[in-house]
Length: 450
Image (tube, rainbow, N blue to C red; front, side, top):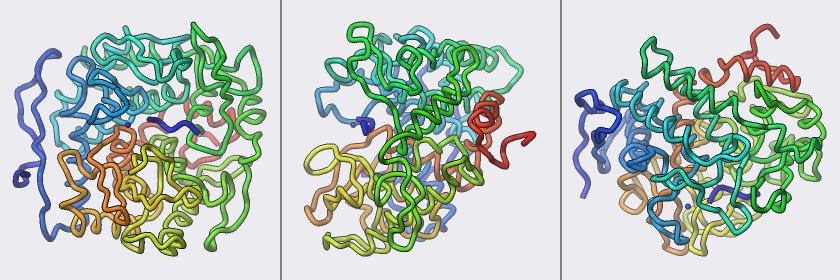
């Protein structure tokens, strides 16, 4: 699947005090911190979430407020490239920062308002945003020669965040009313049914005004795209029918599994589960606890996927240096040979911190073991201004210098879901999502009246 390509100061107070900024004001920076010894588990989670959040706050694009694709300019991206899906993760991270008091509520409101103002005037195709935008102008930056139009999956990740923001910023004042109104306008403009390619029982990933359906990429599961179908079924003005879910998403050679790996039954997906972002991206907002449909129990699916990934790294059949109880987690990231979707069936000896850290809700004990190892044992090589670097390989003595929005955001969000359920509660409270889940015959303790 296409996954979504990119000396320290002593610790300070976790609340940055600032005058209430105007929309055009410079937002006060959050200072990075180095390794702090002997932290409790809770304090360590605070430090890691907060420093990782800096990627979206201090490094957010100064004009749009959206998330840059990555902190470097590899692949000739340039400094203006912002990522639509990663910005959805960033919006959710801003909500966490407000909740945790790392920034003031006024600062959070102003940054989110900056973002929605920009999106309201940015390029979109039947309401669907492209993979990349120019963060200064709002014009599309093509992802590839023919990928120069709407990207439905990236847009789904964006709106997973925007709908959480709409639910969170519920104040009875002009700015928060404007946030909600513009998010509703953007949401209602998405023509989910257009992306069925003339009414087929399938969603299609891309459409371009220049190349039409030439990318020809039907979205079928099981992978990271479940949220796309949930949102498409939940649309108010241009939804898709349940037949699109049952006849498209659930119809592929790699949808059902049912085999056992390392003692764990995997209901859906590729053998060994694939990269861990499959069990993370769609579930930043979608609460998997008790979530079931006719195909799977998604808590079982995601937990067993994570346990298989963990147990494979502990088993370490390829004998890579560093793998073990405290060092695990295979998912898509940078590597010493370029970007790669790491998994037990595509193992290059590269550990990606977001894999284990974004799995906190599923495997809290194992994730904390990995976190303490990454922070205390490898910290001088893996810890930096925006939290943990994207990936590393001890076998190759290679440690990335890069940070990617799509890997930073899930760390902040999924640790928060583990700690408080904040984003899960916000997203599942959306009446549209409630209706969409019912339409697709999902069960969840979060669905009212069912």
